[in-house]
Amino acid sequence: MLQLRDGRILVQGTDNYNFFYILTPDSTGSYENGTWSTGYSLPDGYGPLYYGGSVFLDGKTVIVEGGEYNFGNAVWTNMGALGTYTPFPGGGITWVLNSPPTGWSRLGDAESVLMANGQYMQSNCCTNQNAIYCGPNCWNATGSVHQSSNDESGFTALSNHLILTVDTKNAGTCGASKASELYDYNTGVWSCGPQTPVQLYQGDEELGAAVLMYNGKVIQFGGNVVATAIYDPVANTWSAGPAPPQGLNQADGPAALEPNGKVLAMLSPGLFQVGCHFVEYDPVANSIALTDDGAQCPADSSYYGHLMILPTGQIASADFASQIYLYNPAPGVVSGVAPTIIPASNAYLGGSKNNILYGIQLNGLTENNAYGDDYQAATNYPLIRFTDGSGKVWYGLTHDDSSHSIAPGTISYTKFDLNPAMPPGTYKMQVVTNGIGSNQVQVHIH
Image (tube, rainbow, N blue to C red; front, side, top):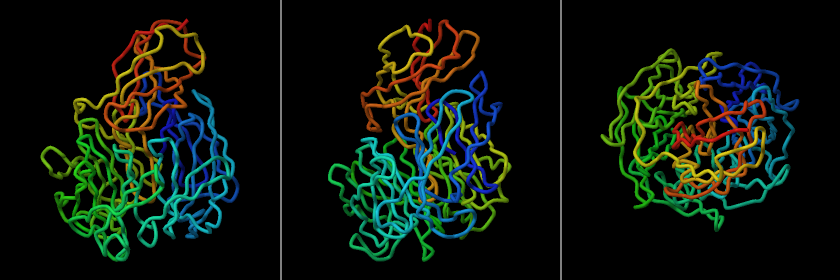
């Protein structure tokens, strides 16, 4: 699942892995009652499973890179594709192939991240190489990690603009078995981070999700290890987190941050075994507790799952079945984390483009959703939502943000286009980021 910049959701099908669907919310903004559209196939020969990807800041481009599997065959492909989507209800997405970085014979299940400067960094699963996207079929090499390869690690964007990764290899210049590393895009260099309190992986090298929380710290779930660890970017230290209950761990699996500050995660016992449960980590109590399992557990293993927060504040949960479920977190929003908007105008021409909206924390304070090396579904960018007096909801298209920083208090702007089908009238306008709405401003569309 990937959040498009016009409020719709792009979802990959698993019938042959090269087919995408688009979910459009209904007129009240509900995804539960939304509608599906079909027909958006990747280029011939490319049907990846477990890969890197992102939605770009231009508001129209999606990138998909690599794949541990291609059409179900384990090949660690170096193929990739760029998708261009047409905004607003009825608009689709078209795909073209995108060349890999020079000399990369494989990308596989490689992690990726959209950094604070808006650049997209892609790893090579099977070497220690990384590259930065510079346009269609164009990549620039950047710093290599210190461990022998990126395989099974993940990238987590921090509020200090560094990128965190936890090593999954027993050898490397940063430490034998408990190493972490930090990337600075200003220098293009990876440096050794502090040691984790426990080894968070076994010989299988699987690792769990890492989520930057609203307290500014990262929770890293152990993979095939019944443990968690907490990273503090300010102190640059790791500390032991609580052990999950019932011997659960996350040898690959999803997690997502709730507006109330808790982290929802899907765990299961052992390595790739079924018997999953959903848990919530409470950063205030520093505890992990079981929560509602819904319909997917205990039949699934944690690696089946994929979680992504929606603009409604609900969390979408998908596995390899045809049904998506919505988790409703406990009400509440952590104080101080909501975006604030400062519109340049209170009146806009219907269907107009390139309007400017200023604000504070427009990108939120976290990427919000995590899996590791196999999926990336960051939602840390502003969506613009309009609600009329009857409760009908319209989304505009946001694009070309001035910053992608998740540092607290960041002042930035985004451009936005209005849906031409939106009728004239008075609306409440707000930005929603990571499922959290900003203040509302009354505007007139004429």
